[in-house]
Image (tube, rainbow, N blue to C red):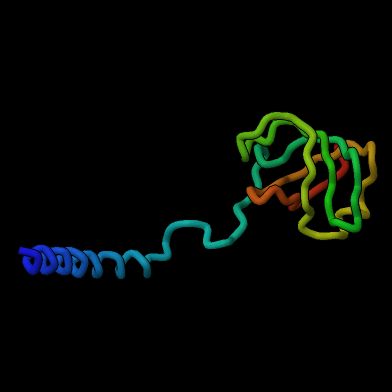
Length: 111
């Protein structure tokens, strides 16, 4: 009886292998690490509260982050490029984009 179940289990595992192999080569879906195009809902208004150049971070009091489903609050964010830290100072009103890794990917002075 044990041999029967072992054979049945092996057959079930092997029959799923072709389907798994087909799926693993299927690259048409997903972002595969590519950044998505920004939209108006990705950009958020904020105010710089602190610029921390040694750690490469900004503290920003921001409005709703619609692309991430987060409400307004003050948060610390990493920046994609350290040069962004030279463009802002505490008190600046900005419009910025944050990705799902909580990294500021774009920032500009608010108009």
